[in-house]
Structure formats: structure tokens, C-alpha cells
Image 1 (cartoon, rainbow, N blue to C red):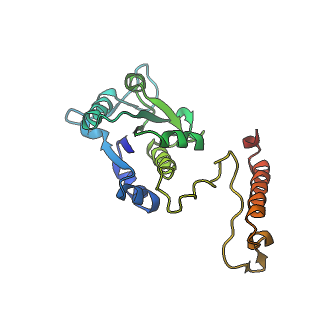
Image 2 (cartoon, rainbow, N blue to C red):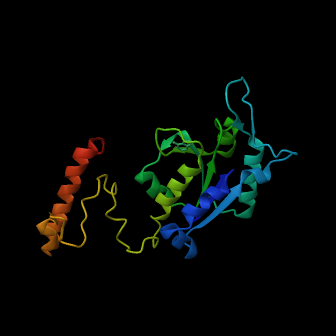
Image 3 (tube, helix red, strand yellow):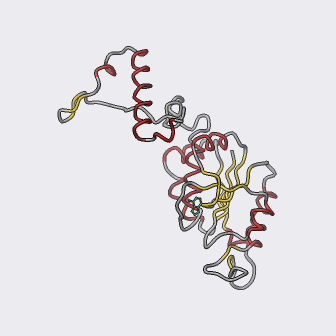
Length: 225
Ligand code: ADE
């Protein structure tokens, strides 16, 4: 998979992309993440990327020209087809199902905005879909892009050390994950449920399923529908 990110702040990505699963996935060639600075495509003495909104109002709006030219440059660099996504609070809510859907794509082109928003012609002209990571407003699309990249890349086959570990993730079957324990058996008087020490795999699986349902009902009743 190739993931292109168009941003005014590519350096924000370097640390999150260089640890653990994301780092390994890039090193092993499972994913290539290409960061492009939109400002490199801006023209004029001030390399302007934003301007005042037509019709008045507060804040600044991201201009078409640098985004379109950055985008076209990336299409010339690789003709691999893919999905073009604007990160915006107005978008389709991002969830595990959408992460799984996106993990099956060959290429994602993520456009992270700043300021009050994008010139509408960026969305319409590039045929971009919009995705939001939640009902709150962040100061830009960079953190949402990183959240999406993390959620998608760990689903690529071979990204996780233990092949099975995405299978049991929370939300995988629309349920929260069951409780986990590791050594020691007793810590400060707190014990591990007997059944997990029993070695009876069928009973353990049934116990885990029941705990998943129980905690989903209690903590996320909205998921139970
Ligand atoms: N940009 C600003 N806030 C955002 C959000 N919640 N999701 C996606 N992009 C955003």
C-alpha cells in the first residue's frame, strides 16, 4: 500500500511514524508513506497557501492552487489508483469498519487541512471523500491523518507480530475486547480469574465472549444494536 499525505507540517509525522508497528511496516515494504509539503507547491514571493474567505468572516481558507499542484505532482509520480480523502470534522465518521475497508486499498491520498477549512473546489475538483475522526474540532488534519494511518496499517497482513492479534481487537465483531491478564497470578491480593488458568480452551473462549458482551452492554450500549 502507498499512503500519500499532503500537509503544511510534514515534520509532525516523523515521530509517530517511526515507532513500533508503523516503523516495521514501512521497513518491510508493507506500506510506503510519502509526506508532501503543500507549501512547496505554492507560488509567489510569500508562497501563500491560504487566503481570506469570499463573503467575509473570520479565519483563513486553504487555497486551491498549491493543493491541486501538489496532488497532480503525486499522480505523476505514481499512477497507482486510490482513494482521495480530506480530513475534516464534516466527514464520514471514522471507525473500525472504515479502517478495514481502507486497508484493502492500494493507495490512500490524505489531505490534511489547517485554518478554517478548504476552498470547496478542492473537495469537488479532486473528487475527494471526507472523513472525520470524531465530533470535536482539532487545529488541523495532521493528527486525524496519523490516527487513520495507524488504524489502517496495523490491519495490513503481516503488520502485526502475532498474525492473530487483530482478530480479537475491540470492535472486531462490534464488541469491546474481553479483559486480559498476564503474570503474576496474584498481584497485591488481586487474582486472575480461575478459568484462564484451566487450560480448557473452549470454556475460555466462551468466558471471553460473555465478558465482551457484558462490557459492551455496560460501557458502550450504543454498540449493542
Ligand atoms: N480536522 C479538524 N478536526 C478534525 C476531525 N475531528 N476529524 C478530521 N479532521 C479534522
